Image 1 (tube, rainbow, N blue to C red):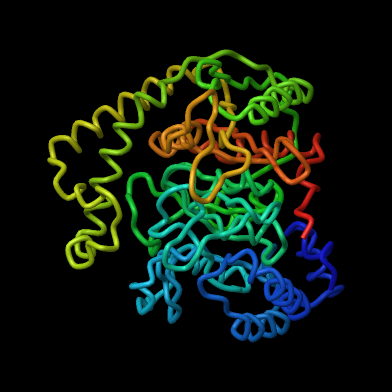
Image 2: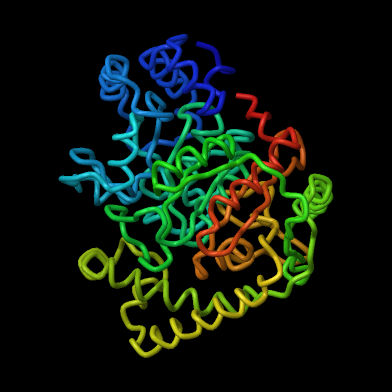
Length: 443
């Protein structure tokens, strides 16, 4: 089974499976072969399950179809509980943590007929966008293995980009789905907070944790969302006259190719019928301190035991999160509500927001790039994505162009709370008018 077939989107593979032009076992064997060829270079898995996947594929071939994901090869970022299979969150000391039951996401995808290929590599504890992991090794970008696929869902993004799997589930609390999607040339979707269950997802910060799919096309994301969240998504239809908000003060930082691609994206959006409208949003500089206070307090609540028993596993000053006063957390939550209200007012006259996604084209594993004479910080790297985690808004990263042949650049569309289906429609209209989703890594 050739590479071109493995790189076809979910909805096309599903059609081939339904018509028996290919079997699930054949598809899974091809994914195993591709993984065995590329995994030594890309390092995308913590737990690879080829024997289990083949047994499951054979069962899927005998079963009646369960729907549009029946027989589709899937990976899960190693934060989703899997009954009888270790869930480590990227920390080796948790390698013996074997859940007794599936996460809700795991359960829904299994009931939909997916075949679990394994648990994807990630930044330790799903923290950061570096694509590094001191316990299980760094992940590599399939477009250029000298660079990172970003993080924390870097393993998932790389797997989807090269056809090891057709769909992967990631988590996002600062950009961990969208940023890897941006630099791997695929689609990454962070739903409205709470729309997709995080029950059984390894905890990081409960009020900013999101679960969402990484796929090769927007249609595939829509298929996954319908199963994960019991929503109806209609991708077809005109968007002419739909208003897309742009905060020009926000869009001022990033590598030159990121900003150039974004300007090209704006012209294309206008060309397919969107009306661009200037808006003024709360700044990332206002949001970041609030986000960190909430995040660290909730992280300390979830990780209290391990922070005390295994302090060496927590780098830098992260253990200081245990010392943040409750009053600071409550004040931050009040300020968060104020930011949500201000954002809602800013979006009264628009349907969507559009911005760059990740301000970086090629992310070194060990350092952020220098832009405008200074080295970017973590806050800079997350300036376009983290606000939507704090606000809980649905946001999607999709391919917007290329810096060079080996360097995809994504951009981001966000919407109002629970307008997830409309965000996907807007993204689909853009995707259908551009060629970027049809380009794949050369390996």
